[in-house]
Length: 424
Image: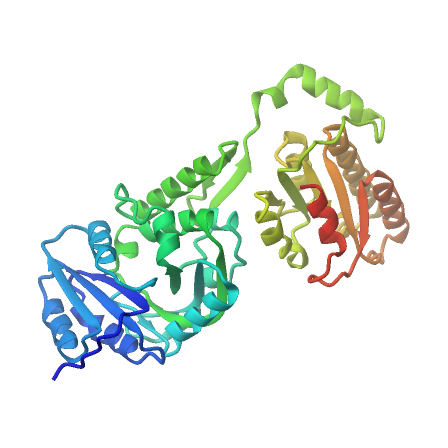
C-alpha cells in the first residue's frame, strides 16, 4: 500500500535520469532515509531503455512523496526544465541518480539556510568510486567561497539547496546550454543572491566511466568556459582575460593589458617617475582590483569581504619575479597588499638577497608611480641569515606605504581589513 502524504512539500528534490537502473534505488533510498521528511522527489525519466522506469514506479508505489514523470529522450537540459516546472516546494535541491545523500543532508542544509538568511547553501561532498568506496572529501568542496572565486572553480558542486525565489530571479535553467548547466546556474544565483558554504560532507559523489562529465570531458570544459565568459560579461568584467590550462583544465583570470597602458608616452612617463622614489601619480579614486603578494592563507578570508563590494582580488602566486611582472604589466590592478617578505631572503648568498630587496623596492616605486595604493601587513622580522638586509628593506617599504598594519590581528575584528575596505 502506498504511503499517503497530503502535506505540501517544503523541499523539492529534482532528479533527472536516463538508463540509471544500476544506482537509482540507492539514491532514492538515501532520500527516504532523511531525518527531514517534508520533501518531494520530482523524478524525470528521460527516455530510459533499461529498468529505470520500473524501479522508479516501484519506489513511488510505496511513497507518495515520489512523483515520477517520463518522456521521450529530450536531453538533460530540457528534462531539468520540465522537472522544475512540476516542482512544488519553496526550496529546491538536485540529486543525481548515481549519487546519494547523508541522512541529515536536507535537515542540515535547510537549518543553515534559514539561520544565515541566505539564498543558497552548499555542502562538502565525499568522492566515491564505482563500487561506492570512499576516496575522501572532494577538492572543490575545500575551496574558500567567493563570487569571484566561483568564476574559476566550481566549489558549489554538491549538495546545493536554494530558494525557488532566487532560482526564478536568476533566470532558471539556461535553455541554450547542453553541458555545465549547474555551474552556469550557480554563477547566476551568485549574482542575484547570497550563497553560504556548509562545511559538512553530506553528499556522496560517485565517479565512474559512464557519467556525463567523464564521457564529455572536453565539452564540459568548453561549456564551463562559455558560462564563465557570460558571467564576466554580466558583471562588467570584460577587462579580464580568461585562459585554461590544457594539462590541468584549470581556469585563470588576468587583467587585460589595455592599449593605453602600452603606449610609448605612458611607459616613458612611468619610467621617469619611477627613477625618483615616491614621485607618483595621484592615487586611483576607487579601487577595483587588489593584488596580494605573496600568496598566504592568513589573508584569504579577505576575499569574501572584498567580493561583497565587487572588488576583484588577484593573488600573485610565485617569487619576486611574479610580482614584478604583474606590477610592470599593469595586471596588479589598483592596489597592492604586501605580506611576508620571506621570499626575498630565500637566496643562499648575501648579494642575491640584497639584490632581491632592491628590485622589490624598485617595484614598489613603480607601483606608486602608476598611482597604485600600497599597504603592508607587517609581521615580525623573520630573516636570520640576512638581518641587516631585511631591516633595510622593511624601513624602505614602510616609508613608501599608504598604510602599515601590524600583525597578527584577529580576523573577526576591524584591524587592517578596515583599512583595505576603506579603499573601496
